Length: 108
Image 1 (cartoon, rainbow, N blue to C red):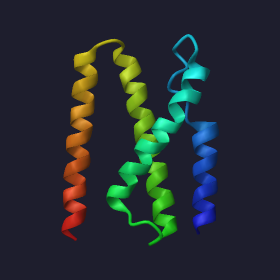
Image 2: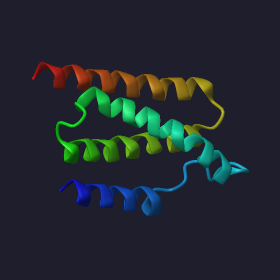
Image 3: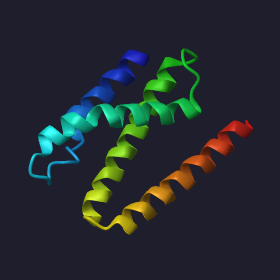
Image 4: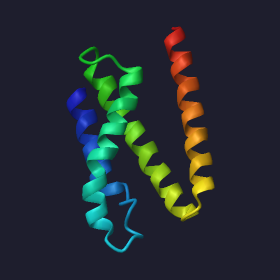
């Protein structure tokens, strides 16, 4: 099951999801620089919900979901432009929701 989820995740991430930095002048270069950071952040978020080596299918699925969420957040930040306040509000709302979900999951 893990191989199928990983394959679908790979396909969607590389061929379906847009480059969130394409609106910038050097969007492809920025994407190559930012991709390891996005990966590390997504990997860290998944670690809040998933214990390593416990269920690889679940881990792969969670990585895919949170990667999509993070890309959507970057797209949203690009829409608000240079508004630091709007970006901070978006980030704060995301963190509040994330930590609320983590607290609910840890209750079980």
